[in-house]
Length: 344
Image (cartoon, rainbow, N blue to C red; front, top):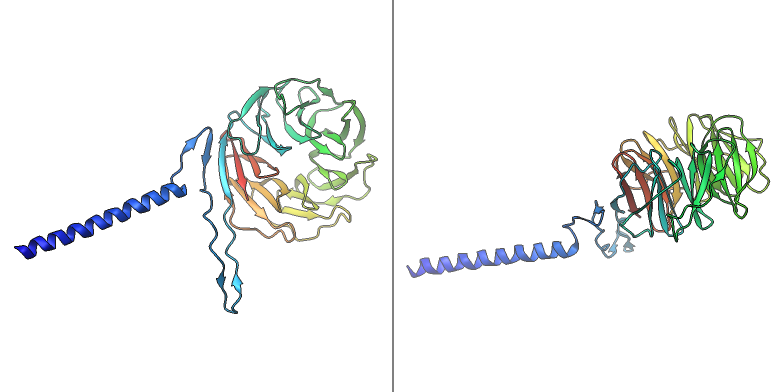
């Protein structure tokens, strides 16, 4: 009998120790942030990576560096149908081409979007020269909004055509309207020049001393930002529909070839194109090239080799626009009213 009581007490001690171990594990996981929820319009998809382990000795006796940590992906609900996003000057601006509703995050760490009204539905938005610039096809105009008071309307700037895209850089605002690129003087807020293009432009980017336009789904052309002259030489890219600048190069996204790297001086492709199935948009910055695709993924590429870096990252539905800010990469998901924030 005494032996039975002793065995019972032993079993109780073992059970108690096991229960204590479970409690300790749950507490540690909770403190590490494994359990996360949705709050303040933000939903964390991937928990913040754990601290990287210390280097371990390799076969040759030298320390080996740990594997690269996974980027943190967060979803921010902004409402409406966000179809274009521009990050810069510390804020994130969103356009909705289906309504005159626009949204801004006052910082790249904010999770509380502020909405305001525009003159009409904006097909594109760009950031620079201390303002966010919206393009209005219905009004044939662009307008700048100041970060200090985005709801305060400014006078719209009339264009000669229907703008399909807007960009900022090289001391001016640039609007791609039908068959020309119009230059807007920042100070006078008037169109100061227009460069005709032979064909229909679908995308515009400003950088590397020039304005770059994807034309007729077949080529990328270069306009000198200082003179407004169109370069005689173009870059043939079959089925090209998007263009971006950054990381010392020009990037063209094509329906058939994926992403191509173009040297801004020689106008030659410096690497083989990188296939990205269903590619929708491209941006460059924070040491990488970023490509959204119709399968709700964001692909990260090495800017030197165009080789994929890590696995594709899941984003939202219809990720038609991507922009790189100072701290994160931003994707506008028109199909589910969200932004995806990726912190590399």
